Amino acid sequence: MKLTTKGRYAVTAMLDLALHADGGSTPLADISKRQEVSLSYLEQLFSKLRRKGLVESARGPGGGYRLARDANDIAVIHVLEAIDEDIDATRCGGSADCQHGEPCLTHDLWVDLSHQIHTFLSHISLGDLVQRQAVRVVAKRQDTANQSHYVQLSDIKSSTA
Image (cartoon, rainbow, N blue to C red; front, side):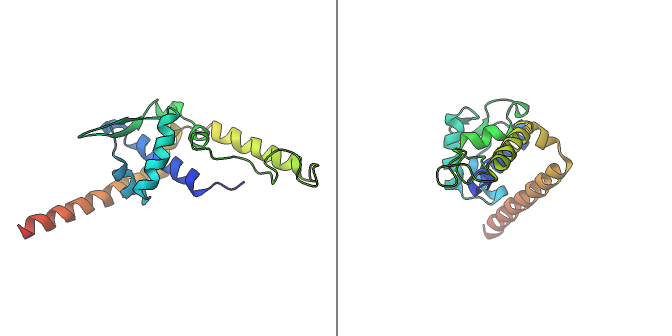
């Protein structure tokens, strides 16, 4: 199984959104800066996430995105499935025709692994991830770096006025 960049970015962006849920809507531009992901790529991902009911959007000043449900009710697997990320370790896509129309020697092993991964990701919610100390440390670092970037820009503007 290979988790694509699309899957990694979607989970990362949704976790970022969950971490910043207390402030209302979060602009994708903020997530883009903190996570160093292209804004246009995030827009594509969030379009799918919105259609699947995982996020809600708000337009206008103070607009952005927010989780459509509590972070504890959104499993990582929900995010991956919403963006059509396939959790399958088999070479044949689970169709059991890997070797001349028949299952290969290790087909059942890879099917079992796929099920284990799916189960694992089904039992981890965004809320669970938000509670992890390591996640909170990284989020604080990102927020601090982002705030200092804004301060530096405002300092530049005020010093040139």
